[in-house]
Each structure stands twice: as structure tokens, then as C-alpha cells.
Amino acid sequence: MAEQPVGAQGAAPFRAEPAAGSNSEPGSEPGNEPGNGSGTNAEAGAGGPVAGGDAAGSVPVTPYPTYFPFPWRPERPKVVIKADLLPAVSVLSTVALLGLAVGWLWSRLAPPQRMIIGQDGKPVAFAAATGNQAESFHRFDDLVLFALLGLSAGLFTGLAVWFLRERRGPVMMIAAVLGGTLGGWLAMQVGVAWAEGRYPVSGNVKVLDVILKPPQLESGWILLAWPLTTALAYGVMAAWNSMDDLGRRLG
Image (tube, rainbow, N blue to C red; front, side, top):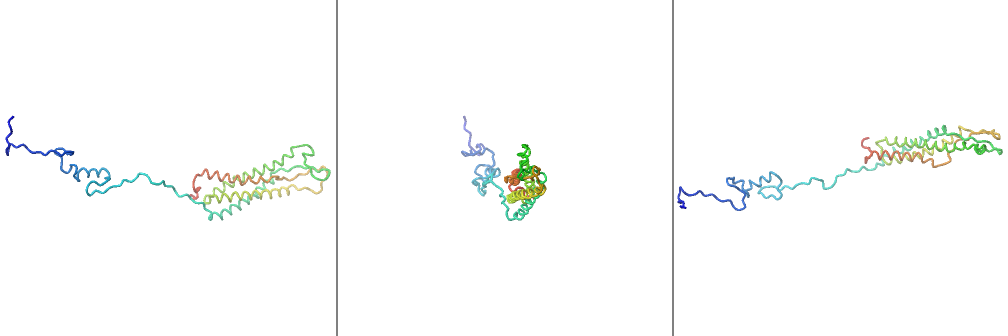
């Protein structure tokens, strides 16, 4: 082939070849070439945080975690004692006074037991004298009736004290339980006394006379019906509430 003449007009145009490892293509802008701070690194900084700050003048951005380092828990409410002492005393005395109503109601509802005057002038159980065992069942009826009244009073006490929302807590529950215990003891004492006044025994009795023996409570364990039911009712309501402060702040 004939060599091309080298001259001013016939010289071949000179085009610089890209350096090795360069991603630039022919016709690209100088500012877009790799290594230029206004090009590739600027676009990277606009698209996301630059970990090390490669480009001149760029500020390194530290990514924040998307979770809390420690789990957040609300502060647990504390048991209020001083503010609930005076209301607790009021609740205790009020519940105890309900024992008067329970005792009066028991004295009206409890059935008496028939007795017969023996040869020695002392009353003998009608069941032992006549063989009628049905009369001796009234001793059990008196206990069962007092227990039912105690259960009802305990349920009423637990629910009523629970609805004192501003004072909910263990202090008020203890006061209600103690008031139920005192109220049960008071109901037993006044109930038996009022029952004896309702069925008096005349002094002019003769042999084989039938008298009515007032109702009696022959077991002291029956006093636990009222306070235990109060504690159970209040505890069930507190468990059902499922709030740390039992809803006091809403009161």
C-alpha cells in the first residue's frame, strides 16, 4: 500500500486513547470522568451517605440504627400508702357497721329449735325425747344461713370498695378484709343476742312443756365467710382490670 503523505493538510487527526482502568467513553464530559470530585463522587453523595468522605469537602454521614438500643418501659406506679390511710379507716369502720344489719337479718331468719322440759326441769332436745331427728337439723340451718349472709356481704363489700377508683390498691383491700372480719364478729354477737330476745324462755315452765330455744352459732370458723369473699371479689376485679395502677389515674 502507498504511504500517506504527512503534511499540514493530509495529516491524520490525533485522538488520545483512554487510560487503563478508566470508564470514560469517547465524547464524555471531562467533569464526569472518574477521579473528578464534581462528577461520580458527587452523584454518590446525592444518592446515599458517604461512609468515609472520599470526595474533597464532603461530610461523613453516620447512619443511625432503626431500633432503640434499650427497650422502653413505662415507669411502674408505686403503692400509695399515706394518702389511702384515712380513707382505709373510713372503709374499715363502715364495713364493720354492716355487721349490725347482717346480725339483725340473721336473727329474723334463723329458725329456733324446739326443746321439751324433762323430769329434772331442764330442757331436753325434742329429737332425743321423741325420736324426731328433723328438729336437730336446725342447728345446721343456723350455720348455713349465717354463712350465706356472710358470702353475700363479702361480695357486696368487695365490689363496693372496688368502685372507689381513686383509692384502688392493696391498702384499701386490706381495710375491706379487716372490716369484713370485724363485721362478721359483730354480726355473730348481736345476732345471737337479738335472737335470744326474740325467743325468751318463761320461768313458769312445767314438765313436758315445749319451749323454743333461740338459734345458736356453734362454730367460730363461720366468721371467715365474709372476709374471704371480700378478698376474692376484690382480687378477681383487680386481675380482670390488668392495669398496673388499677385505673387510679382515670378517677
